[in-house]
Length: 282
Image: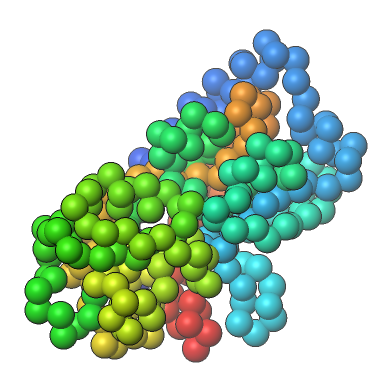
């Protein structure tokens, strides 16, 4: 089931999104040669690849048994660090500070499935790892909200995650709704479902790849749109981020991602960690 269409994008959509990585890799190599930068050598000299990680299952989350960070972007970071010959040094950060931390040089790469929104593209450079979309959780007994159009009505309250790309999408596309911005304990994956269950909001935004896991965990809720798992809203490229203008590191990381893409490893990991039993610690 998950192997067929994890996250609602599927193999073709996922590969289309990551195919741009190859072009980015070649362009980055030319640009880095012109600029004469050598970020990878600096990382090697420093003895570690510094990564800021914002939790967002299934891309980065803690194993329920070991407490270890796992997920697709973590594996990308480990693969990159191994190629350089240094360990991956992870700093867990919030979604509201991950971009600012990168700009402040607190780490070399922002390891998270960041929606590549226009606002973010102005301040950081991305290495695309796939494509994702969003959806909403609504109480199953709420007969007034059954469609996306119902969420656009005046008076509807939607919970979002502070500083997330999803929040930008919601604000842009649901202008009549009242937005409640929250720092989520579940990370950038979605606003707390408890906000909906308690009646404090009508809907809570979440990453559509978690549809099956959320509906299994919260049987009193429904997803809007109902087919969010296979047809999420606003499918958008997601990627890891580096300092703006760092073509050398972009080229290097794009090469790492391309190898994982070509081997099928990237898609396999994404499907594996979208499994509700893994996400819920069953």
